[in-house]
Image (tube, rainbow over all chains, first blue to last red; front, side):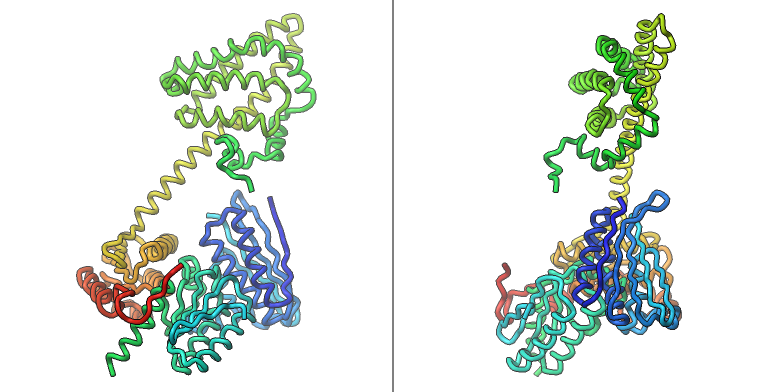
Length: 133
Length: 123
Length: 324
């Protein structure tokens, strides 16, 4: 039951592919239409981050099961320059109304679990998890 | 041009049919900017009914379209944002502040026409 | 894609419960059903087939002896169907072919019990009576080799427990389905969106607003805006228990989302005191169109519909578009 698929993010057209696949997997797992949209939007943001900051990377989508509940996991990773200060990157740009600051902090609001692992010169891995209610 | 742009009087209507790539969106922005100028349009309707996701890039680009249109004397209305998409946008923290929005094409056109009539009345 | 409409209820349920080949194999592993069991069951197959009527009666006699068991027997056609299925079960039980089809067959009877509201304990008791009856005939037949008889019976019992597992799961699953439906109904009641006029919705919010409820309310409202083509929404928060900064932010989010769909939201019931304290907390209320009380809010809504927004788009101005 643990389906997994990987989408290479090489050109910006791949962002759409990643989020469509994400939506499909979410639907198969049983997520509501609204949750599918939230997930697709989150994938769009993290996939775009890959293009913007690393040039290329991959998005891995998989169904997950933990302690009786089911959900979906999205891992967006790249071997790009990395983020010097992940804490700062997660500082909410939302309150300033600047949509440029929306990316990662925004994506975090759309999912249940969020993890950002990055260091200068070591690439970036963003892990998102969303659980069925 | 992947997004069809219709002309109705002095209003341009861009109906986005399906998920657009970033490049398509930028192309749309430039195309609309060009036509608004050439055709002296007074209004632009961007119909996003078919879009299942409106992320930060799409929102930024739409803002860009509205801004450029305004510079050339046209008002912009975004129509057809679906309930789930509106919800996701708000959760994400995206704002279309300053840009008119309407439920659908019919409402959007009515809004633009009403705006014109309002301005005409004030003169 | 399989068309659900073409499947029987039992098949559809089987899918819903995830009773795949793998799942059935796992259930067989759990009861410990192996090759030797199948051999032993084969050895008593004819014996069991000869007495199915007796075993079926044992089951239903026990049901009718209990008040709670009579629910299945109340309706004649239901009772007859149940007896028929029971007979078929007994036959299938000794065929030694226990796969997805076998399990799906059990689902039909389980659904029948579930719909009739049969108590699980009563079912287990009646089923035990049936097994007693089977055991008696087996031991009688194996009078001279009691060990063999006992072993054969125990093998068959494994299959019986496989069946019980399935039936119990169905009863639980169906009960949970009812609970889920009730929860949905409660949720709908707690987020009512009323259309009080063409293009005008009223959203009275009462009680506690937590993040979960705020989301439900927003989703309901946005759906309603589309369904009713609403242009104005009066959102009354007079009845909201506590309006702190969190709740205020939920309200602002709902208003912002509605605006994206072209609807103007008028928030009523926000007293001057509460508004003041929210401002002090740093909440920007400028985004909200607030009016003191509901009456005032409705009047403001009427004004907006009648004048600024123009309730009839095809009257006058410009060329109306024909929608396809």
